[in-house]
Image (cartoon, rainbow, N blue to C red; front, side):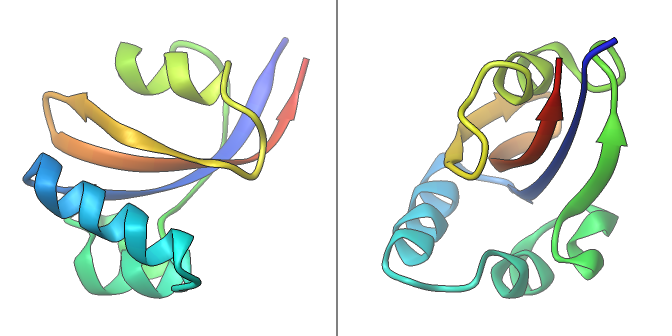
Length: 93
């Protein structure tokens, strides 16, 4: 069964999400930004969500995590929780 590890930053607006993505592209540390800005409790662990299987996360999140290139920041991804930046850190088929 496929599994993935990912980290994310959850914010309220698409603008915030895009701004953080620009900062990361400019060299800012993903984990530090997660600690400072993420509304998710995982922010305290640098946004780390651990390892999970398809279907354990909301649909929009799952689709990105199980299709995006590993190590590349994706987003904004909108879910009922807000806007996410997502980075797949590992994935097995």
